[in-house]
Amino acid sequence: MYPYSSTRSLQYQYNCFTSPIIPSMVYGALFAGFDAFQGVPLQQAMHPTVVGRYMAGIYVYNVSTCPMEAIHGRQSLLHNFLSAGVIGFVGVSRGMLGLPFLQNRYLSNPPAVGFVVYGSIAAVFASLGRKRL
Image 1: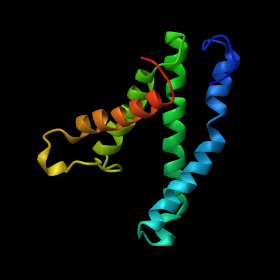
Image 2 (image 1 turned 90 degrees about the horizontal axis):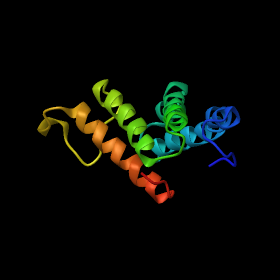
Image 3 (image 1 turned 30 degrees about the horizontal axis):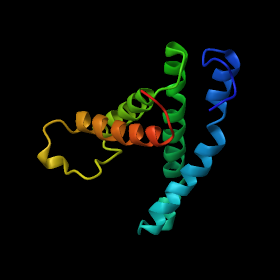
Image 4 (image 1 turned 120 degrees about the vertical axis):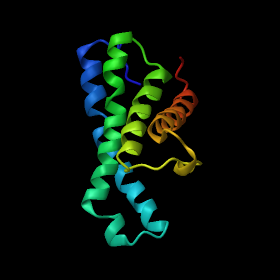
């Protein structure tokens, strides 16, 4: 990800926390645009609160892997699994995220299922990015 010899170096951690800022802004706006293309009224889809939540969620996901990389001294797809899993758990429990491919009424503990579903999606994408366990 970064050309530094150690994930524990100060420069690596600085870049880990600052490099996701611009991509989070771009993809947050892009995801809000996807909402508009799916039929959400434009004033609602591109509302600053909605766009800001997308941006913040993407940034928090990226940044939450940084301390785990520093502790373990390397990148791992398990870090992505845990980061997305926690975001999925909190999002589902607060009603801000739904469960893709599943219906809540048939589940006994939707936040726990949200942890597994969102964490698994992130782990698959991390493995496609050639991250190891």
